[in-house]
Image (cartoon, rainbow, N blue to C red):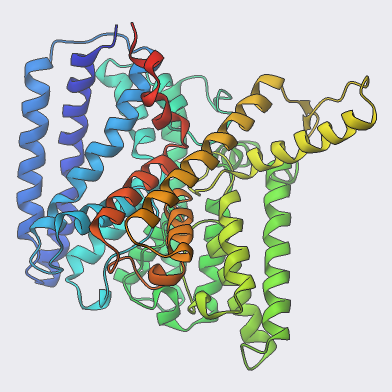
Length: 484
């Protein structure tokens, strides 16, 4: 039996907790006297009311959650919080957004996609600017991990949620025996990275406001900026370098950071096959971008070319989507290469999007094994990650994931073409939203404001699919899920 009333009770509590996130932007509005505080105060009151109304009638329903309940909560959690997160953007006078655009912006923030419908961003009230960045920061860790630390206190087991939420195929390896402890440790690392990143940006010349905002979206690998020109606005190689450094760190598995901190040994990083593969991919992309930019003389000198090559390669392949320059104006080979690199994305257990490095690594090894089997049909080949053999069950799950990913991609792209988008726009918009990347090509190279509302709703679904790693959402469409 599905524990529907327990699920509604938990959702009510989560919405009430989420209402607290409306307070900081209201305070920012008050501090800067930008007149944009009212939508946040109203949203706060609405969230508290919605949370109370859903929680109070179901407050006595406390049941142990099954795995199925965990999946449903996670999906509802993202959909409900995305919708609630859009309320202040609907209420705000400036920017004057319709429902589809406001929801697109909120879901893009919360899923750390970083695709925006806004232009003239620097002219917006500071409260709205801050709120967009805060949404990314909260979404970055999957607010669920915070909920995993809180839910045990509310009488709900957290492991089902953690399984459904944590990116990547190898997720039963808990870092600490108690799941709430695990979530807390993840948050400590996340918080420490954010504070360090904000300080580095500030010392490199950003204002305190910009430093905090960009630290939020950098560590979340989100890609929202407080300027239309993104990081390019600052025109500073040092700021670019800091951004690249923190994007790289944030795209690495957070459990690996935890292992390094606990063991006080940096060599732990290089003992991890996924980290080594990720590092190799980044270096290869930077070299290719640099050589092509040199060959086509896009920039006047080598240092400028290197600066842009490093920044764009890391920003797009980790699925952040920050820009220093319109990468869509580069020789077409590079934008297409970088968009394809976003399909790989970050490491499992990081804030990055995409299919995750470990999955792509396993797909590659499985492909190599099948080729070897053609030559030696009777030989037994084990797939190994480092020194550990990977169970066939996990390899099969990765193949299943890949098939589902491809299917969802094709369906969303065809749906977008049906709404009137051209091929390049439909392809890049699907990649940008399903991989939680942000910028696309064609009509969505600069922003997503000019596409039809129907396309925006379809892309919201793509963002949620991407953030929940396909299966978590896809499982709800199977008849078996709803049978008792």
